[in-house]
Length: 342
Image (cartoon, rainbow, N blue to C red; front, side, top):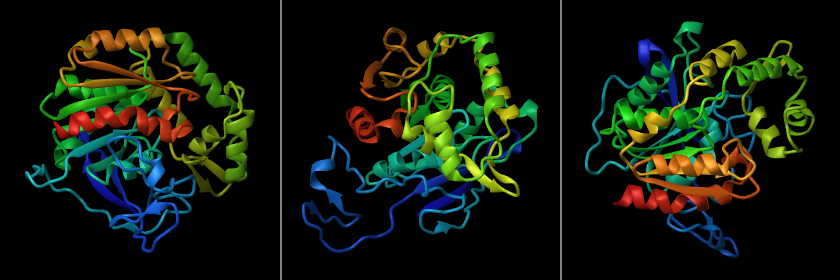
């Protein structure tokens, strides 16, 4: 099931945060062990943390056409809630540009066996508020993450970010070291990408054949037909199916492409190496071998980070945690264990 918690972000923007948990399961199955939480195949557990027995899949999205189990009522948070010594250690998960909290559902369920894992729909994404164009600044995104950690009582938290969410994670760690005990940076470059990159994105959005007639068409186009795709990738199709909702004329993204471009232009022209030097907590840089972050740049990021570590996932592209979820968990498990149990 998924439980929504309301957070008030920068400028009063309403943000949706999500906790994910598997429905209760009972009974025994051959080849596995029965736990009090859920059935865990004995052979599927990477070092350090338990692995859920099932992936949420494309139909397990909160707030879309087919929710994965019951969605608990929204729980508004009135103000900062300090974590007690008995509270589970906090983890905040931040999706990338165009993403949503449910992209982290499988990782969050895995982490929730031992920690309190919360995924945030960032402003303009998922079920969070979509304010005017001027509201999509880097400072606003970082302040939103800061508000989530404070209002949900997660700090000091491990912050896990993918792409743009990873940039937010290390900027938050640099700004508020008291709130962040560790960061995982998944496939995000520190170098400036430049004007040509922004123009490519503008052109790419114009190629989307909107509206899609069905989710099957979404999966087909992004997984097979998209000219931006280097090779067929069903996981990519599933990823984009997660960001669509049904409208009167068909299936469209839950965000406004114009706002995504605005969000991107606030960081694409700048390099972010200086902010990496200010991250004093442990930091793990993770890249897919076929992703957007090259090995040389990733290793330079590790060198620049005062307490940087490196991991890579084979047979994975930019969507590392979607392409190879088990390998992704295995890659980050030792770091998670070390940071959250020290």
